[in-house]
Amino acid sequence: MSAGKFILITGRTSKQGRALHTGKDSPEYLEEVSTLEMNEADMEEMGLKDGDEVRVRSKEGEITVRCRRSDSLPRGIIFIPYGPPANTLIGVDTDGTGMPDSKGIEVEICK
Image (cartoon, rainbow, N blue to C red; front, side, top):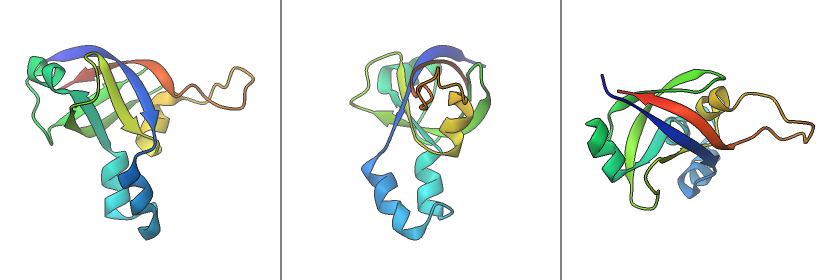
């Protein structure tokens, strides 16, 4: 089993926004928020292909999502859209700001 350490950033995607019209329980929305984007070279190094399932673990929790190649992410950075899977990794601590950290989260990915 291959594993690697990465930095997670989260955010919104245009596809996620378009899927909201069908509701947060719709297959389109759930598929988008359950997909991790990763640099192609990182995927190759881990033996991953588009659509493979991976486990992502942070100090807050663990999820299983599908991975997808990204041409815009640098090596060592992964992206997951805001949603229930990402929230599991982010945790609830806000350091008094009212907003949890959603960028720069250290995670480990296992195939």
